[in-house]
Image 1 (cartoon, rainbow, N blue to C red):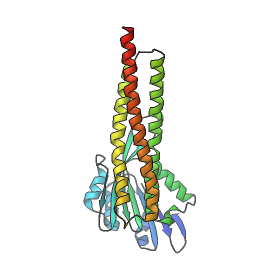
Image 2: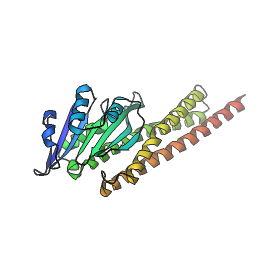
Image 3: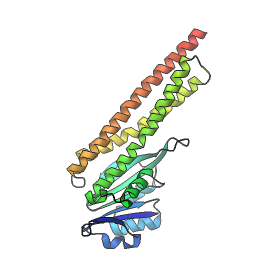
Image 4: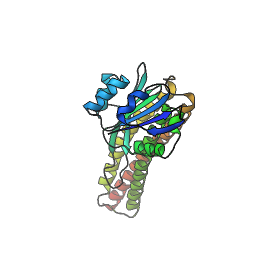
Amino acid sequence: MINTFIFSKEKGQTFPVKTEDVPKYLSKEFLLWVDMEPMGEAEREFLSSYFKLHHLALDDCKNEATRPKIEGYKDYLFIVFDALNFNPGEEVMDTINLNIFLGENFIVSVHAKPLQTAQALQKKLQNGSPLLSQGVDRIAHGLLDGVVDNYFPIVDELDDCIEDVEEKILKGVSMGVQREISHMKRRVIALRRFIAPQRDIINMILVDHPGFISQETKTYFRDIHDHLLHILDTIEVHRDLLSGAMESYMSQISNQL
């Protein structure tokens, strides 16, 4: 599936266009966002032919094991960012690579599965949001900002689980508590390993690559960086709380013996 949006400087508005019409909009008179899910051979050929994207970067888009990174090419930036879809009651760590090609007047986003933040951004554009008119780098910010916002419910859910375990320990409940604490410790470690590289990516965006991201948009990226620092600090607090919970639990068991 390919969703394409164009901002026409002449018309002063954003509107969706058909994939086959994209070639005639590849000029500086238009700002273009192409969102692709997933990327098959036909889609790969489309990107290679019209956007001249490097075959190694396109290979990375097909590989969900590609680690987060940012690479500068002559005419665009290539960013790989780890996203999470928050699905209450389902798999907590529903991970997905968000691949972004950011050029002077175009942005291409590629993901193997539906991405909630991309869907939300497309809906905003359909409802008249002027975001694309402010530059393709603002679309890049909107995508990454939405991805980071989806980290918060995961962290909040973990916070609730820790409170629940602490309450059980205070009530003297011992059945299954040690297993719960161990499980949550593994989740905390996995979450930190998952999120920490994203902080480094945003930091590199702030420090390098001035030709593709304006100083004004970097102000918005600093906000993403602050959010990531806050999340990582919270995860460290969770780790300390779980260590304290385990100590309390072991002390309680020792006293019972």
